[in-house]
Length: 65
Image 1 (cartoon, rainbow, N blue to C red):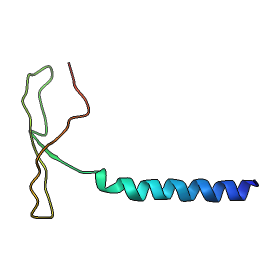
Image 2 (cartoon, rainbow, N blue to C red):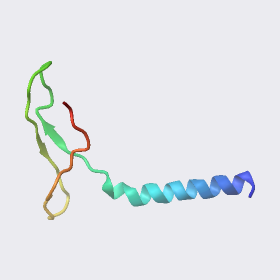
Image 3 (spheres, one colour):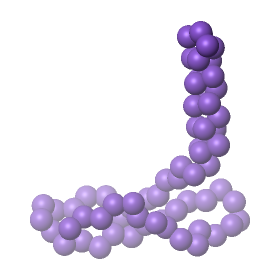
Image 4 (cartoon, one colour):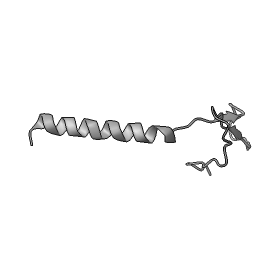
């Protein structure tokens, strides 16, 4: 397999992956937007939607100790 064919296949595969994964990307609005240094704070998150379907869950991918 020559390098051009390899690059074309790799680029196509990556593009297809990004197109199919893009609906999984979302945004949330977090309040408050700023917190004091070493302060304990509870945050509220809202998920704006463009459809009439309600948001039923939010999964946090990180945890701070």
